[in-house]
Length: 419
Image (cartoon, rainbow, N blue to C red; front, side, top):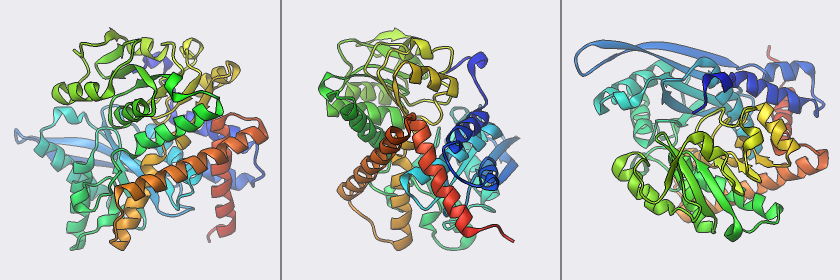
């Protein structure tokens, strides 16, 4: 959703964010240098038989950034623009996200260069099972636990779990999260990331002295995270005035009903044609006058090119890496509060952790218990990051990184260097 001229290498952004926070910490140079690099990387090239009988070779990745705090955790995305540096960045961000959330995980990420919309269901299953087989040298319930991400879903996770289980000769529920309920998934998992965004936005509005009933909100992206965020913010009392998906932006100053938008999307698979909104561009959507902006699409959406025209008081990141460091600096100078991805969208990995724990012990909680535990962790983590930001007079992203890096660095130094 950004032009090539404004797109920065996400891994360089991740490292820049890391270096900015490290300046506030008293950790050894070798520990910092280790954390600037991924721990291990796997690139796989694998054939898939297509419906017409031909073989097509696909490229996939799995990157582990850190294993210091425990097994690696991170999603798998299917997208034509997947590349190794994107996966590296996402794995690093997962390390900090898990550390901020207080979870016993390191960060990982995976991806396949593919447009899944161009595949039949059978081709998608073949691709998934072959990719799962290729990365199974790294994947295990106590070593590396994948989850859904862009263009992957519970069905894809079920295929991965089944493939891994077939190799082991028994069902291994804990090897992936985000699975369907029927095969060991957790209640509340589908809504978890968007619900966490809502909790974070609610706490941020309170800090700014703003009431949800007097808040206008714009949500970029209408996938799992964006649609759930819009629905729950609407239930909270916010007026949703703008949303977008791959077909463009949609604006109504009098408010949009996310339930109606979702019904339209389920019928047409896109928001295009929704009759109760003005069609605008994605660029125009990001610059709408509003109180709350939730970028919940892809990386590099808020950049030096458009940050000066963003007209929101509060930005809560539903996507991973939507804001470049240059844009962060503009927002800081303009006194726009940015709640970073590693804090705001951690609801997904938190409930993934709940699912993993439930699968390991074969004891499952009801949805009320899941949401109660999620809210408690999201609010606690927000308060911890807010306190660091106030104490050190830094932005919320730097504060979150300070907390996360300090936790990982302390664990690394306690474990020592092997051999």
